[in-house]
Image (cartoon, rainbow, N blue to C red; front, side, top):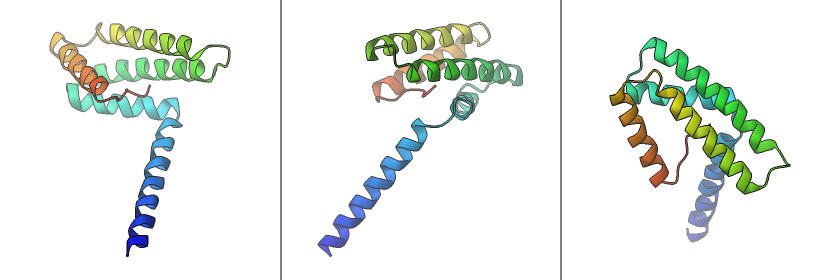
Length: 121
């Protein structure tokens, strides 16, 4: 019985690691769409806002893919550029989100950061 529990624990760990790895290799389009869908529900976006957000998220996700795969940057340079891209994304959201939506978004992103999560764009 003890061996069975150990095998089950290893299997669960392996499956969890596989799922985590699958998320990190999702295409830019998949990540952008998933984050837009998440924010659509959270912020109750209008159709016009959804279109604008999807465009921004896809552009940032594609840009971030290029940075992540670039072997000429150091890890710190990549982190700095990705942080800059995130700041630009939030700034662009500010052009079409209401003040209440921006406040909710900032609270959501702060909560994600506090939990060690990122938006995966």
